[in-house]
Image (tube, rainbow, N blue to C red; front, side, top):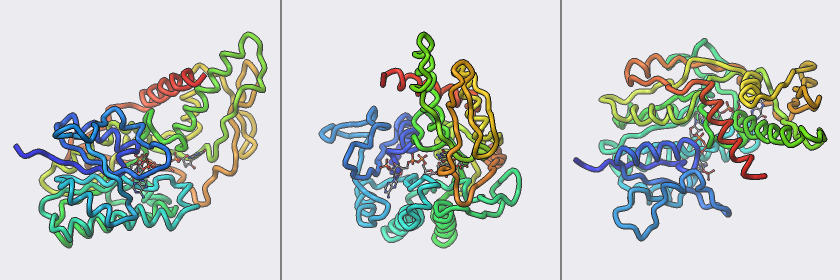
Amino acid sequence: MEEKVALITGITGQDGAYLAELLLNKGYRVHGVKRRTSLLNTQRIDHMYQAPHIEHRKFILHHGDMTDASSLMHIVQTAQPTEIYNLAAQSHVAVSFEEPEYTANSDALGTLRLLEIMRSLKLVDQVRFYQASSSELYGLVQEVPQKETTPFYPRSPYAVAKLYAYWITVNYREAYGLYACNGIAFNHESPIRGETFVTRKITRALTRIKLALTANTSAPSPQEIPCLYLGNLEAKRDWGHAKDYVQAMWLMLQQDQPEDFVLATGKQYSVRAFVEAVCQELSIFMVWQGHGMEEVGIEQSTGKTIVAVDPRYYRLTEVDSLQGDASKAREKLSWTPKISFSELVKDMVHADLRLAEQSL
Ligand code: NDP
Ligand code: GDR
């Protein structure tokens, strides 16, 4: 049987790392695009690394950038992939307000660059393409829960860039017959989630707070206990585990026909509920006090404020509430997320607790 070859952009990110692992286990040769950075950025994939002198390597990294068509062209020509997973993106919604042009260049035009390379190299019949689309497309939601037919209303430069990427993927499928699919993925997290996304920010901070509280029980000196600053506590998200979502990405490229799919758990929790779930898992006894911007979370044994609201983390245009309906993925791909919200919280909390202990 012919060897399957995958090219993953964004391989150094959360999803890229899990997807690479999944595909290597399935016997794929995996090529990944990584950016040159002044410090190493391969922590999530180092366990898969194979040195360049190894013959018939299964895991190969290439320097490249979504804003640099010539690097992408060279990588596609070298790797000769049968499947391309386009996961690279400036993926932080809040940062996209600060870097809107760069976000558009990498997330929107970057996708076009890959598609154009497939077209100009006459690969449209040989390569299957996955585009990492996002529930952020729904933004100001027009229907609850959101499914494939729900109208889009993006609310950030990130979401607008992803809207372009969504439609240009559809267009290349319709115009050139490319096997191309959008996975409209709702939030998915894990112990290797980027540290500035809200779930990981919460698990990192509260595990450190837990250790500080434990260290302080004999001689309480509450000033040493750090505080977690958050923005909108009422925002609601449909949070799943990244391991489940990369499975769906692969399934989408194994079908007879290319289609777009919502990937979601169907369950919704607020940022506040996530904080409470993490406190519960860590046996931190916290009560909320005050309202709005003045609201704080007080740790009961020390009376210390361990959670506070900082308006700097509020978004100019917020996405208040997302909840997906993944019935189509369930019916056509037989995909359902297996990892529950409480298992996700446990997984993240215990991984961050280990890291916090190591950093002491
Ligand atoms: P991450 O932010 O963890 O990873 C993004 C990856 O893209 C990193 O490897 C990053 O490299 C790379 N990257 C960023 N800019 C460029 C560029 N200009 N050229 C080349 N590579 C670049 O994101 P996730 O793994 O969480 O998400 C994967 C994809 O799925 C993204 O496109 C995201 O927008 C989308 N998505 C994610 C969801 C989620 O909940 N996780 C939900 C819906 C969509 P580096 O390591 O050097 O920064
Ligand atoms: P999101 O994820 O914007 O949904 O994008 P994020 O975790 O950044 O925010 C989720 C919600 O939490 C609120 N929030 C905070 N967010 C951050 N980052 N930091 C805070 O301190 C904070 N306090 C409250 C936010 O306002 C928001 O409502 C993620 C990314 O992975 C995208 O790439 C992906 O497309 C979408 O999920 C689906």
